[in-house]
Amino acid sequence: MVTSNILTIEALHERLAPQERLIGLDLGTKTIGVALCDPGRKIATPSQTVRRTKFRADAEKLLALAAEYRICAFIIGMPLNMDGSEGPRAQATRAFIRNMAGLTEIPFVLWDERLSTAAVTRELIAQDTSRARRAQVVDEHAAAFILQGALDRLAMLSR
Image 1 (cartoon, rainbow, N blue to C red):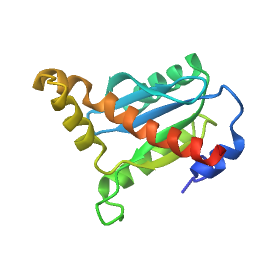
Image 2: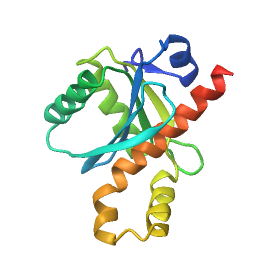
Image 3: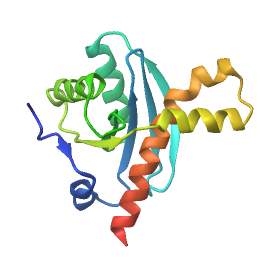
Image 4: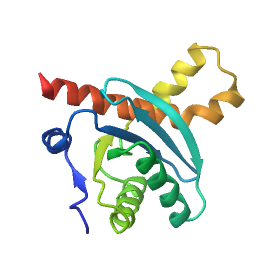
């Protein structure tokens, strides 16, 4: 398995230069939620939801975004089971990274995404967002939730 493209958050922290941006991904079976951070790496913002088609087309969209925003790393949600073990969705995430590794040198950081969608859904409900609108934006908001967790950890490492 190709793991050279997978870094820990601590290893990413050591490699980051000022103003380098990160992209957060919430990888689903039908969609990929995308979030971006500001150059100061303080705030994660939902960006878009990519409807999945074929791997190559999905990868091209993500790599185009990475180039457009000069992304230095992908923060990808790792769907762990509640006991911390890896199930089929985690294996699919690792397979996605393996396939992407052949197309880019941009590294990936796996970020525990347990309960991210549930937390985002609760927040959207609290904001009185309609069910239809929640369905449209939940993935990109989950990506922002994942990315914000990583940004907060990077800020802690900088202290």
